[in-house]
Image (cartoon, rainbow, N blue to C red; front, side, top):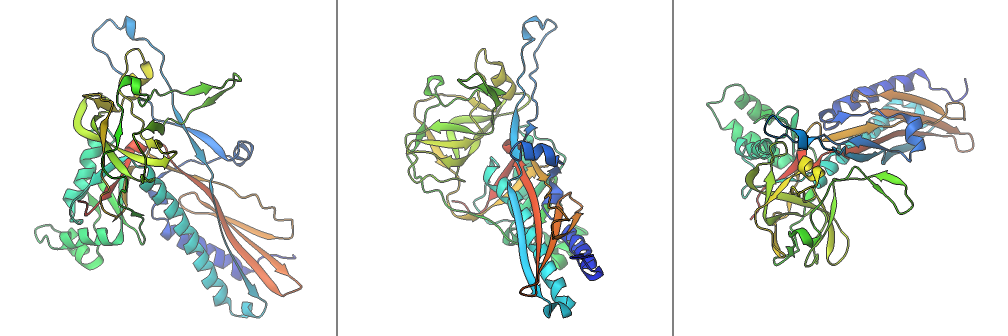
Length: 422
């Protein structure tokens, strides 16, 4: 058969999948949603995934006045990552089949790294729970802060994960290795720099990390938290355009107006004076200031943030459902305080219902002069390996491709830890 894979190439591809499974560190710690390739092709590779429902509760036997409409929210998930690793070998180089194997291994490592980086960036730049630590990483107390932050707003206690930069993870392992009174874990921490499960989080050591620069917006920035200030958000399931056509709304983000956005940058973390967390179920004030992230800076006075400011507003049922803040004292000039005061490595954490990876399919036909092989990893990611020979040059072209998407369905169920902040 012309352009067919020989047995050595089949074995090489099987080995790529086997080793790829070993490298899927973060993709194994998030939920997977299998997409239909026809549906995705017809919808511009975007599908709307449901946002967790939150239902209000009321006191008393008589609930006559409490039968109200409920708002279902959804978020767009897109197959936005197409990663490809191409290479070629000549007919003479193919005499050494180890070259083919080594190149295949390198391609596999690159694709695995790209998937991990996509998850890391999504969690690291969209997670809205921000833990600011003034010292270097030490161990239990650091991750216990993430546990407290999630628990006090009602995030489920199962399926929690913490990814740490190499230096921060090893600092924790060093602290654990010195605890001679802890059996079992001390030895693995000392021999293998392994931290394991801490305060309900499964921990992972990354082999790279993202750096969040220090906030440069400075002091003196303010925002109105008054009802008339235009910065309070009302969740809606869909909106209707002037043409009468309705469409879904992404309620994870909100555009707000500040006194100034000079030097503010995407990724910055901040609190707002007198804007406190609300427990997502009970709606009680936790007594802790709500943390927010800058998603983008749109103009000299406007920026997109996450999560939106949703206090309960009289007569608006969707704000009762999805209330996430308690404003104790509304003001026209509430002070913004940035939390990322020093450049630091991002250490994301999440509950596994928050992050989702969407494997896609590349429909390259196998009868178009290209030899095609497909395989699926343990986490559901499909790899497509293609080969084509050029009779003019004697070169055999190879490529390893993957199509996937990553979505943070609920930024308030994910966050970051920043160490060594002032």
